[in-house]
Image (spheres, rainbow, N blue to C red):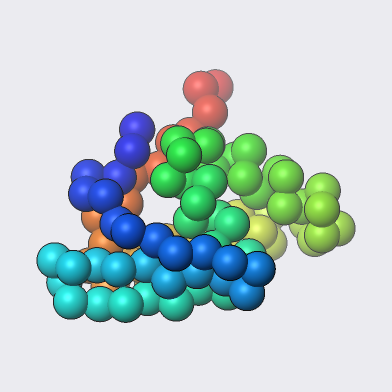
Length: 89
């Protein structure tokens, strides 16, 4: 499921900037956070995102999942309406 509202995003090799016109925020993301944000925008399940990042970085999946939860909590605290997908069990 996609986010409730579309958020214009500009991304490059350094990260991304999200425009929350409704809340009046410009939110900057580092490279990893930008990849997570873009994957969520495409509807990719969070478990799949974490697994891919763990494979690429060598970090434990649980550490990446913790970081993702914190990123999403921070974005929600800024007023972004985010809905994530989860794999069916």
